[in-house]
Length: 272
Image 1 (spheres, rainbow, N blue to C red):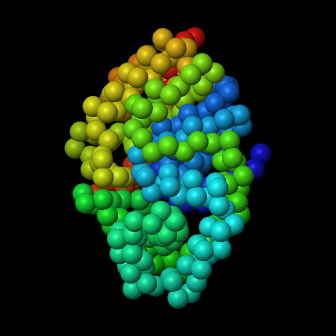
Image 2 (tube, rainbow, N blue to C red; image 1 turned 90 degrees about the horizontal axis):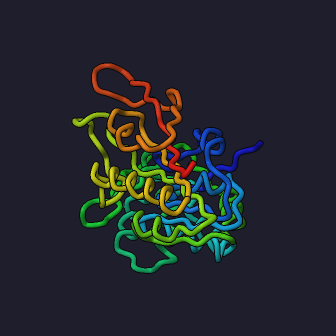
């Protein structure tokens, strides 16, 4: 079956893991995602309703705009995908405009431009909340028109919310299924852990998420599937779950010794 790609580039996106996630994601009426990211799981599943959340208000603003005003958005955003706009000076001027703008529509248009022209499609903010990813120097950045229209069509049954994972999990009702894709835990205690947002995701929050997932499955019979690195720490956090190891899906660069193959875990908390 053809897989549908997200319109955003996204570090840690789940497109490569879709087959495994689909295999282990229980059935239900409503899919809840507290860490929606680029939305690959949402775009490739078939629930009657979706509650999709993230702490990144620019991301949620963009998704609401694309859902409700796709034609206008495509018309405006496509104007920033020209030969002239694929230029470092132009990019940094748009990044500055984005950081200074308080207009939700303009920020949504600029967010897509920055995402497709910045280095590696990263989404990173400094402590002042300013987007600070450098120019990516691509030959010809792709304008994802088809993907935008597909997202808009699929999101007519979706609610997008900017809030914390704990608040989103609190919305789960009988018939819901939860998929969590938190920022991945560091591979070791000394690993460099890059925050994707101004609020980094701490080890305490990783553990808290696991505790909430276990409680939701045990007390409310709502299944929760979590993806993460396969480490001794994640296995400890997820000891109450059914663990499914996914072999070497990604390579992580490490200084001085090439690349390290990293296994991943899918942890399913359920009442079964």
